[in-house]
Length: 439
Image (tube, rainbow, N blue to C red):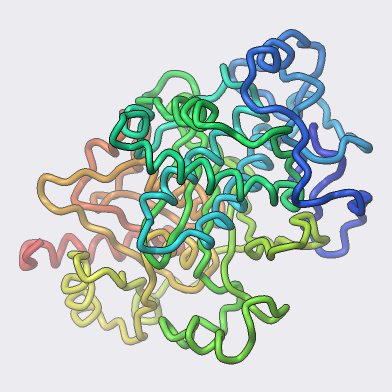
């Protein structure tokens, strides 16, 4: 499914051999600010003109302006018939936003990961608001505007403003128009003010998650009427080439010695995405600095593994030492004849591993008193499902994303498998082993 946005001057090509029009990008520069940010006059302009039909039609039949100041290059606008490829425009914008957020994360020191959290929320919120109008954007995320607007947070706010503006100078390389002037503190606070959704089953909202630390990742999902309708995951440290997975956690250290980070062979990082009902998931490399995101054939479809024998399946083993799944997974593997070495991955990467067929099973169990937050799972669940996999709780029930911030009613934990037959066997194995475990 090629990404297609009505406000783009071109289709983003993804299918090998697909004929495409490549825009004239000679005039793009990383230091030119064009468009506007959040002024009242812009909001009025965005909502006064209702004559244009966007690519996708939500349940609310929203129409958007014929001009979105976010998208770069307006010379060859491609418009799809109304109702075709539902949520296609939203997905296109979401992929670009996550690509840009991942780029930002790589430039923020790991010791200041809270800075990355704030900055990611600003970047994503700003892009969504500029694309669809501020009144149409509601985001459920970790941080809220009150935390950053206090007197004690003045230093952090200034740093966020600086970080975000540095990132926005690269916007043209992502097919996005940056603001015509650098954002100020009030603009940043306004962007974060849209991260005030409480979720639920009525209306639509975005769920934005970011995982701190060395394996920083970004997840973005659109939830409409309590159902996840699109999901995007950005994993800056997950390799595009499967052969690098054989080196497990030594991948980055080995690759950095073989080639500099600016080399074409530097194959670090990916963005994976899917749209509900499409029956496909797509993966593309992380955007390389000083190159355009819209490279021909930059994305490939992925699907889950065809392995349905637990004895031949590969488990995803979490790297985090605090994760309670280690001992239970090891015991389950031993008792049920799983012989393959587990694939060690960080947090969100487990969803990529299953969807791409790098592994067949992962299990995440919730400690007593803790609850899983929807922004950590919504995007990944949809991606695995569209790639042909199955995700449920440990009792075999679908995950419910319609109850607010948390996944309510979760039976023990979250289980993902490469197919229905394998999933049923794993669920049965969990039930058989559960009472003897310490979880």
